[in-house]
Image (cartoon, rainbow, N blue to C red; front, side, top):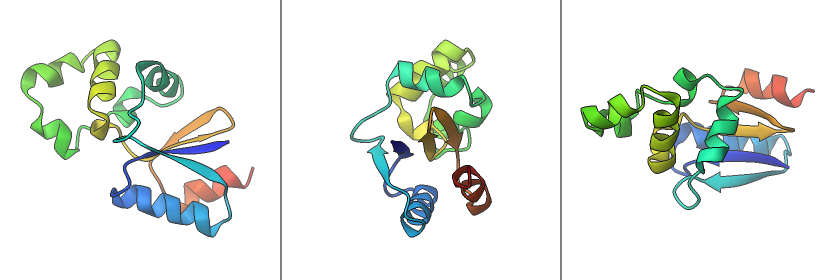
Amino acid sequence: MIQLYGIPNCDTVKKARKWLEEHGVDFQFVDFKKSPPQVDTISKWLEQIPLEVLLNKRSTTWRKLDGQAQAAAATVDGAVRLMAEQPSIIKRPVLEKEGRFFVGFSEENYQEIFSK
């Protein structure tokens, strides 16, 4: 089962969902707001996605965090806990296909991912 994780009103997530629907890809959407990812899920993503890619330090949520919270994200464990508590700082969308994880969206990447 293909899963797409994100926030429904995120423009990039909307583009990814639209692309998947237009290409007839059967997927399940997991809303971060209704079902935040658990620490073990985020840790699994980090086995394939570098922390500096998954942790979106350009997000509004990140910029609103105090210095202490941002400093806690300096370690992997701290970053994982922070992402579990504040899923809006996770770069979106996260796509899971056949045990592989991909972050972000571009038509070129999705065409490559789904051509296999």
